[in-house]
Length: 249
Image 1 (cartoon, rainbow, N blue to C red):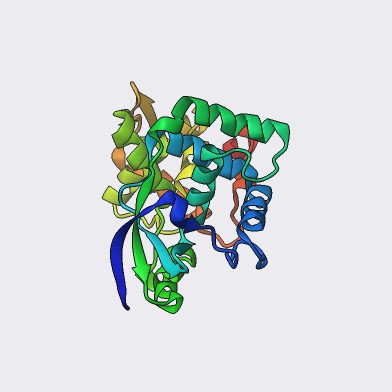
Image 2: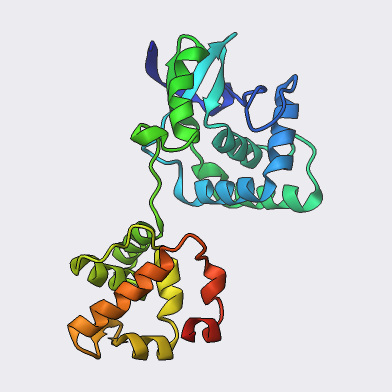
């Protein structure tokens, strides 16, 4: 797969008019207009994050040379966000959206990146392999493997320096006691143990935010085994524990 790394000016980058996010269009203005129309709230959020924090230093943009410019295959949302901050009048926007980008330009325009690191591919087919792995799921582990709810909670705990959520602490206890938690979502455990009656019946609590046993370990393990079995049933869903009364039952 032939490509070279190169720093390229933002002004030389083009939004891909054949972006899979929308039907093919004829030119840049239409590509920008469709991007902002289709995913406006997300583009605004991305633009604000880029303005405040800069670009992700770990992600290159995938591009192909085209008549002195470069068509972007991976990075079109980022490019759209930056172009709209640099020039909120580049396409016709409603007043609220234009004011939003004008405000970002006024406050952060001078600190925006003017160049980005790109992987310049000899032909776009070479880029398709990496784009596919980026956007089409795990692909048996070759693609992007997203964190589940438990892993996300662990990361947020590390970042904030706070204790693990109740659900993660319970799953850790269950795992340490060889209970099968393969099919259990941590958010369901969180919801279940949010009810004091449930905690009392199982025999656990969270004194000062930390997991503690209120009954014998064997009793708690046995009770959590029943919980695990119930949550592993094919017909189980969050609707069965949505209210406090349902959780008590």
